[in-house]
Amino acid sequence: MGTENKTLTNNHIDDDEIDLYELWQTLWSQKWLIAAITIITTASAAVFSLNIPKTYQAEMRVLPPLTSSIEAIQLREVASLGIDTPNADSLYSVFLENLDSSEVINMFLSHQSVRDYYLEDNLSPGRALRQIDKSLEVNRPVEPREKVLFLSKEATLKYQAQQPEFTVEALSLLADSAASYTIAQVRTDLLTSINQNITRLDSQINLENQRVNREIEAEIKRLEESDQQHRSDLTQSFDLENQRVNREIQAEIKRLEEADQEKRESLSQQIALLRDKAKLDREFRIARLKVDYNIAKSLGIETPVNPADYNRQASNVARVEISNQNLSRYWLGTKALSQEILAMESRSSDDPFIPELPDLLRQLDALKVNHRIERLKNRVDNFPFSEDLRNIKAKLDKLQEPNIKILTLKNREDNVPFSDSLRNLINQKQKLLEAKQKAEQAEFEVYRIARAPVEPESPIKPNKKLIVAVALVLGGMLGIFIALVRGAVRKRQTITANQTPDPA
Image 1 (spheres, rainbow, N blue to C red):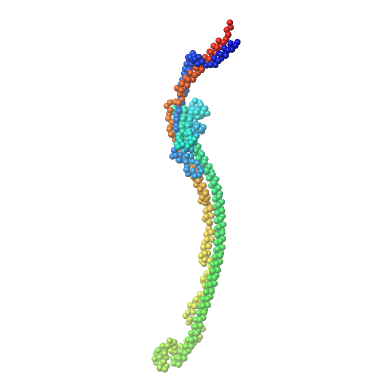
Image 2: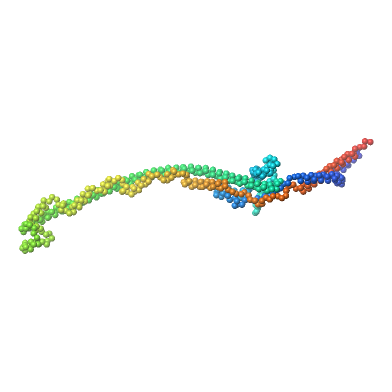
């Protein structure tokens, strides 16, 4: 019993140890099996690789757009209004992000050639989208962790398809779809920002209009009150000036009346003096005529004679000097002298014989009515007598006319001329509207082609050599594995058969 257990233990230890020579004998004994499995596997892989559809790949390289190609969308005139306008890098970045987005893929699939390619095998749209997603490869520029002097912004687009010409077309359509979507997105975002700013400006313009309306209404009220106050002040000034002119006119009337009275008294005094003088002269003349009468009477002269002849005829005693300044009038004779004396004594007034009297009487008579005084008393207004009064009346008349400034404010069509802030806001809005129109019509690019796709001449799939090589290795490994398993099974069967006791 002990001998059997020892034998089993030794056999177990021998089983756990690997005998390389035995392993080699096992593999060599089944070399044809291993070769057959390897050949079958390799042949199957070769046949499989021949039946796999060929897959071609085209490649496109893109770069950010040129500055000249995005000038239409940059809208520098609204940059000062707080609106961010896109630049080349931002447009390019959005373009790269949109390349494999579902929206762009759907746009890509909407092209007839793409639909014909993917849906000809009755693929559902969902499977077609998944297939497109697998076929597309986007290699974007890598952001460096540290700042570098030169950074390439080139991105690579790769597309795989079973038709070589379709890979080129697919890349072009995909880039165009992404560009169209990006352009629409950028345009929409920019227009949204512009519209928001326009809405904000409209609100500010409305508030500014209300403020300006309040200020203008206050200004109109102030102007009306100012005109009313000015009118009241001018009316008061007019009344005061009118009173002053009336006082001056009354003073002038009194001065004129006093001057007339003084002149009247002066003329009356002159007339009285002239009359007294004329009366005295008449009395003197009567006295002289009486003397001449007595001389003529004593000489016996009754009728007028020539004094010169009479002196030559007269005696030396009776000779009369006629060269005296006060020539005696005795030669007129007693008759003439007596009549003259009688006429002068019977004269009731000496006025006709005073030469200055008619002029003085006319002057005195003219003083009865002073036309200047009458005009002053009968005046209708005082305008002719006061320039200040005329000026005040002109100002009052002007105030009766409509106030041009008030009419302008009331009849205004808008408040733009009355507010710098409003003009600034409207100018900003006008700029935004112009920018909006430019944004709607802007033609710009979001990428440029660094290297256009070229139709591939050879497929990238399947790699027949690689498939056969892998199949050869895997077939050999499979054959070796099966041979080892068969060897182990046979060895176990042999050991089991040796350990079975003989029935005899």
